[in-house]
Image 1 (cartoon, rainbow, N blue to C red):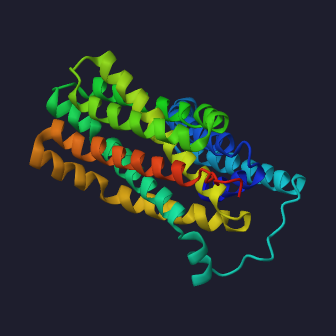
Image 2 (image 1 turned 180 degrees about the horizontal axis):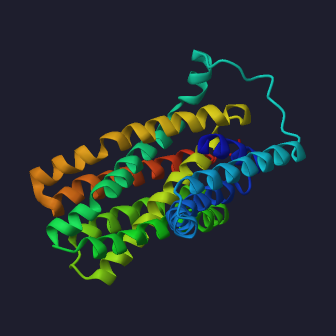
Length: 286
């Protein structure tokens, strides 16, 4: 459903594509952060766990109705040029500039999901933190992810998406490594978690927006789906790769192998995209 939402929002505006996709990501993050708290309060108030499911079902129905109204108001119609995905569709999507965005997305999937899966384990094993302290520090990653949605998308729309992504990729390389090498100070670890969460989530949403910038409007759903497939495939093996890097090099050098080097490679890819997008100056007035 999130991919369908990204595709829909990305097709509404070329100028504010990052803002709109970022808004969806921020609201999703807010839901993840607030959902357990709301469900817990429903359980405390009613004493029945079934009530929470009924409440969520009603909220889902209301959401579906609102989406239906929004679609009618925007007069969204099915594109007659779309249909079953063919090799021709894939050839149109899998051009070098889109493959480059997919490579950046794959690297971000490695970074984000390995961090999600193992950073609390790192805090508890390497720094002997209590579960409550490690969880509190890691919760700042989620808050950073919310900020990395709508606000970061707006900034990317203003300064240029490729430039923003370049800065975010360099920052993720630095802060991803720093999170594993920094002293075990709760406020410092929490700050690094927040900044890294902001960076990786803004890369996630703005990569979707970037590929939507680069494909024809009718190919936005397919381009978004290709990126998501690569992203989640890389995410599925990210924890294993981080564990292997940790076992081979330790947490410090392992973080450089999983975060520092890959994100800098992604930054180099983005520089290549920026240079390839510049118009060639013709000589001799021709």
